[in-house]
Image (cartoon, rainbow, N blue to C red; front, side, top):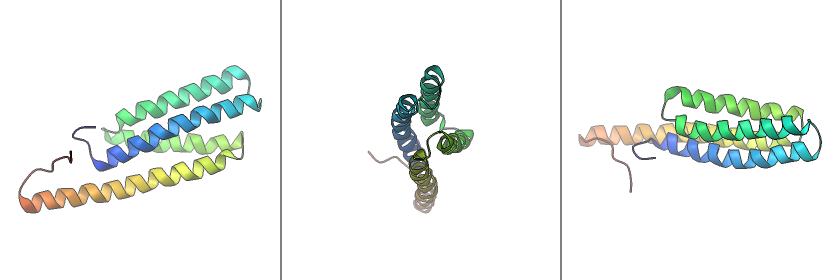
Length: 124
C-alpha cells in the first residue's frame, strides 16, 4: 500500500487475514448444518468478499466504518455458532488495537515530519 498510513496497512492486514478465517467459519456453519447450504456458503462468500474489498477501501475515511460494521457482522455470527465468539473477540481486539496504535504512529510520523520541515515518507 504505497503512500498509505500505518493505520491503513495494519487494518488491511487484519481484515485480509480475517477473510481467510471467516472462509473456514463458513465451512463450519455449513458442516454443522446450522443454515441451509446455499445460505451458509453464499453468506460466507459474501462476507469474505466484503472483508477483502474493505482492505482496499481503507484509503477512504468511511472504509474504517465499513471495517467496524463487518466486525459487528462477525460478532453476530455467534448466534449461529457460539464458539465463533472467540474468533469475534480476537479479531475485534486486533482491529481496535490496529486502529488505535496505527493512528498514534501516523500522528507521530506527521509530527516528526512537521518538526523536520519535510513530508512524511514511507519506509522501504
